[in-house]
Image (cartoon, rainbow, N blue to C red; front, side):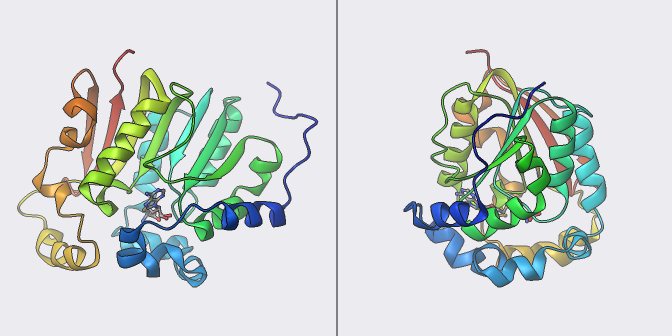
Length: 252
Ligand SMILES: C[S@@+](CC[C@H](N)C(=O)[O-])C[C@H]1O[C@@H](n2cnc3c(N)ncnc32)[C@H](O)[C@@H]1O
């Protein structure tokens, strides 16, 4: 497989300038509820630590990463899209698997600070022309129909208002080829006996007001046509506190 091409590599300065002047704004819900987590430069400094993410995920950061990567395969060929950035080593690890499979990985996010951080973490893979970052809103990806083999959405749906979440899935389904996969890692409705249901949910509901939907609505209700024509394979873990869903999109 050839990743190299004669095209010059975009400098960091050009990249930063392009994402800060392209007119794509921070969505209102993100600025209102998540400015402290993703939007300000110091948010990256604060949260970009594996131990911190592991703490926030109650010790499940490693198993969840492992779970989704095992589902996607050791070698990932073709075109993969990651819809929004995340803290930690998931992106560099995914880049390694994509590199091993001779594929490419495109990562989008609407917050410039997140994209800069993602570029820093995946720089070797970027220089190898395996990974690219794009400043996009998940509701308007701007990529061609059927242009990706798969997409990954890691803990994004619970952070979006319902209408935005539906648009994100509509866009994911549009850009992923028919019969391709959309992998989603998210909260699920835990078992009644789970202690975190009583300790953590109340905190989460204050900090993350849209997360409540994860418990009260059927996941398929956010998918285009209510998920009709898709195959959903769900893997629950940690007393059903978390889930990995592999969606196979309908044939087009
Ligand atoms: C993937 S989610 C949650 C990740 C998880 N908390 C972590 O870091 O491990 C957070 C990301 O989604 C991005 N995001 C939120 N709304 C978005 C949208 N409409 N379009 C693109 N990115 C979005 C935020 O900027 C942030 O980088």
